[in-house]
Structure formats: structure tokens, C-alpha cells
Amino acid sequence: MPTTFSSLREQKRLSPALPLALDLEKILLRKVGEAVGRFKMIRDGDRVAVAVSGGKDSMALMEALLALSKRAPIEFSVCAFTVEQGKFLRPIEPVGEYLRSRGVDWTYHRDNPSIRLIDERPDHGCDLCSRYRRRAVYQIARGLGANVIAFGHTADDFCEALLRNALFTGRLSALPAITYSRERDFRLIRPLVFVTEAVTRGFAEHRGIPVIPCGCSHKTGTVRRSIRDIFAELEVDHPHLKENLLSAMGNLQPSRLLDTRYLNAEEEAAEESELLQITAR
Ligand code: SF4
Image 1: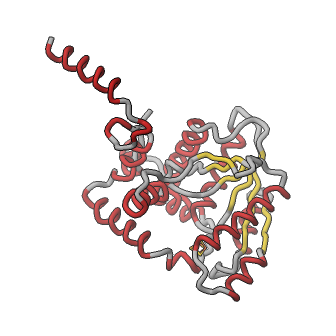
Image 2 (image 1 turned 60 degrees about the horizontal axis):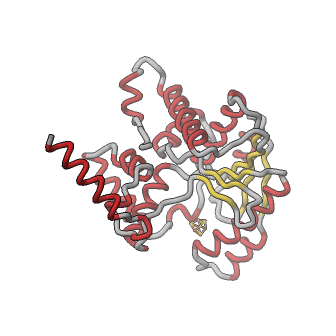
Image 3 (image 1 turned 180 degrees about the vertical axis):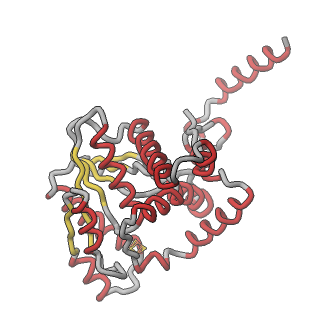
């Protein structure tokens, strides 16, 4: 079923009397609830470890899952962890203090192999960095007794990934909303799939959530920057662009694409002639 994705602007129009902070929280919780439900991301008895990067997205995700854990009809617990790879531009401790003040069990892990990597190979790319981080993440989650790991990738990340893969790698794919680790010992979920960064940014600002910048966020590659620029330019005249892209990702028409694994020309032809007969009547 295609995603219906009403924007922040629409929400504001529908409920102008509500303070913006409350609007944002409602949108965040509704969208996260929609993703969790649609993709069956969280199940009874789960222990969910949220990968907190120090940015606005993962902090918003943490708050949303915390709220859902208190009102969901199933029982699940939430904890948080942060992997230090030597790239934070400020001390991460305010994030820990904030999470503890919210009653969250937060684990901080300084990943020495990653830190050594910066010294030994300062020009290492994202692939190696991600591989080191993944190893640390699984190790921490295992130690926390978690069976689910939640990541803070947003609707913006999904849209950018779709465009990047289509334009630069020749694949029509974005990110998995739900998948499993290679050994299938962890369910990996991205509950912010329907939440834009406009929402996480506004939510974090209104809540006074501490955000720690990552040194790499300034140099995330020319391709990513170009794609962000394309969106920014188009969104001036077409503000619902990302919502439409998200809908498209949930509404495939394989017969209008070129992957022969999903083509069934005979069935398609039968449908077409049936349609012609109906319209001719
Ligand atoms: S942007 Fe920086 S922190 Fe992120 S994956 Fe690449 S090297 Fe690692």
C-alpha cells in the first residue's frame, strides 16, 4: 500500500492552535508508530538497543521508542549506546547526561581499533569506518542482551540513497527498513523511515536535546552533497518531493521497469486487453 505522508506544513494547517513542539512530537510518534507497525519492526519481549550517534536523528528516535515502549500493546525495553570512533567535535558526555536524566540505560564504547585507524590511515574511507563501527555495534548489542538494533536513518536518507543508487550505481534500491545481521542474531531496524529531518531537527531544538556534531558530517562526499543540493533546489517548488518518493518506494510497478526477473508480459497483456474491453463498453 502506498505511504500517505502528510507534511509538517499540513499538520500545522490542520492544527494551528497546537504549539509547534507538540505538533512535532505527534508527527514523530505517529510516523515511527506507522513504520514499526507496517514492517513489524518490534515484537513482544524485544530488547531494542538504539545506536545513538550524538546527532538529532538518533536522539529523536530514542525519545520516540521510549514513548512507544510506554504505550504500545506489547512489552519491549529500550536501551542506548554510542560508539566513539574519534570523530566527535565535542565531548559526548552531555548526551549521556541527557539520556540518563530520561531514565535510559546508556553505554559509551570507545572503539580503539577505530581510533587507531585514524592515526594509521587518516584518509581511510567510509567503507572501512562503517565496517569497524558495525563490528563494535554488534559486540555492544550482544553485551546489552539486545536482539534488535535501531538506527536513526531518516526519510531524507532513504530518498538520497534511492537517488544515489539509481544515478550512480545502476540499482533501484534505497535502504532496508528492516533486515537482519549476517548471523541473524540481530534484527536491524530503521524506524525513522517516514520521518524527515525537518521533524527531527525541530523536535531536538524544541526539546533542548544536546546534539554533538561529528567531524565527518562536513565532508560526507561530493555525491551526497550534490544529491542534497538537487533536493533542496527542487523542493522550493515541490515541497512534497520526498513524501512522493517514499510513496513510490512502497508502490512498485515492476511491469513498467526493466528487470526481467519481475516481468510477466503475458499476464500484463491479458490485463491490458481486459482494460481495453472495459473502456470500449
Ligand atoms: S562520514 Fe566519517 S564517520 Fe561517517 S562513515 Fe564516513 S568516515 Fe565514518
